[in-house]
Amino acid sequence: MARGLSGWLGGALVACLVVGVVYLPPRGMPRWAWFSRKPIHEATSARLRANELAGEWRKAKAAAVGAKYRDQLGPGLAARRAADQPGPLLVAEAPDSVRDWAVRVMQGALDSSWASLRIGVSKVSVAVVLGLREPAHPSVSALDLGGGEVAYVLPDSTDRATCIVTGRLPYFALTKKYRRPDQLLDWAGTTLGPCAFYARFGVPSRRVQQWLGRRGFDLAVSAGWFRESRMDLPWLVEDARFRRWWWGTIYSFPFSTVSCFAGRSADCRRGLAAGDAGPDGPLPGIVVPSDPWEVRKIRLIGAASFLSDVARAVGEDRFQEFWTTSLPVDSALTLALQRPVGEWTVEWQRRMSPAPPLGAAVDPLDAILGIALALLLVGLVMLGQNRREVR
Image 1 (tube, rainbow, N blue to C red):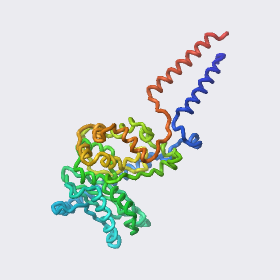
Image 2 (tube, rainbow, N blue to C red):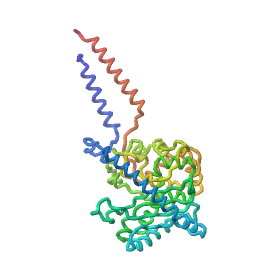
Image 3 (cartoon, rainbow, N blue to C red):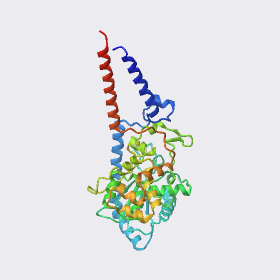
Image 4 (cartoon, helix red, strand yellow):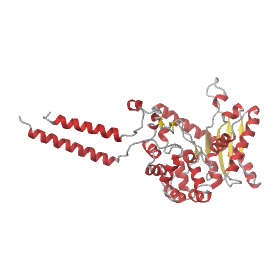
């Protein structure tokens, strides 16, 4: 190596270390994160394939249940509309010992949520069909399978007046354990999900349907525009007041998702516009909400209640205009909110927690040009040293 070159290289290395310490995100991570940056939620290819097959099975199951009950429940739902009878129709497939108690509690929760959402008698009727899931092994009991997995059979060209929710009986119904009224309302709002939006605001425009369908209706999973949503992030924030974060979980999210959560409005706007490729294509028929633990597919943290909070913020009339828009969805949301949707989303996420302390964002082109310039300078220094070297 030419004399004096080691000093130049050592100085460049020290400078890179200083810049890295100052700018590389995140600046607030604990010591262990410097040595273990492997994401916590890292799925193998086999696990991803299994999740994909499970989603396809749930879609097929929902389609079969929807086809079965659409014919059976159609006349009854039409009669309810003709009689101006509001509320969803609940069907519970379970033994009498479970159904007698569960139907009364669940129907009460669904009716309370329906009334709070101010839906009334709707043009799109909603039926909720819940039952026991068959165990995969004889040793597994029905109580072990309690949960809230649901799928949605949306109105289509054959029946534009019916939206069907299919799923399993919740755990509290199987065990006959009462829950607090607010917890029952949360369960009812999540169960009704997209069907509540169809019931209150009608069938959305083709563009909005395509946009939500490509995203799996992730922004409309929870219907609750009558009150401010309560979003807790115990899996992400260890202690928000003292800014303690589960960095392993944060590293598992896509960069754009974390960037939006950290307060970068442009990434929030791009994340919301994801899936908006125009009105062309087949309309969604079966909606199976994605697994919330598949964090690599999450485009917006807290997305389940996003459209509910938009409706609450802008009012139902302006939300109706957005729901039936033919404009690009980010522009339509900006018009409804009367401010840039990215900025509004940043403030909306600040209700969940303070922003994680990420570092400065670097544009890829800037990084490439900077590295190229550094290599050029080092090359010129090496060339100059070689010419001055005494042989």
